[in-house]
Image 1 (cartoon, rainbow, N blue to C red):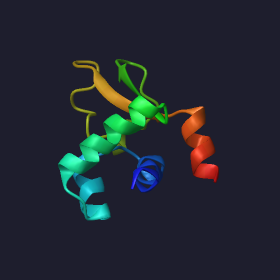
Image 2: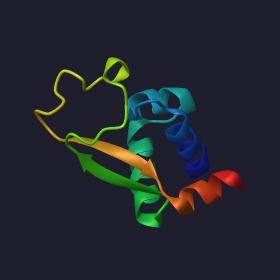
Image 3: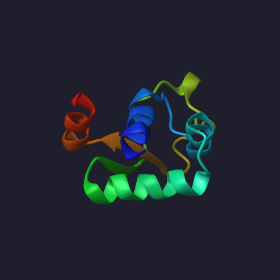
Image 4: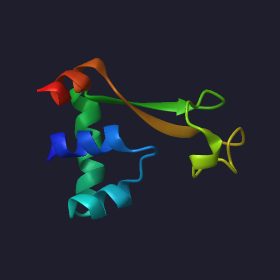
Length: 86
């Protein structure tokens, strides 16, 4: 399930744990636990970004609050990319 979650993270323009839960047909709590496991295992990293977002504002659900509050983003690490390549 963790690799499926990692694939969904990679394929998402922005990450919504509830949307991923629906897509994978899993409870949101399980998806949240999966995120924590992926972070702990070093496959993804979580960053607080203020003024350093790489997405286009028009497609970002946080565009209205951008520059007003930090937005946490997920990044797939090199280790995560290697797992996806297998």
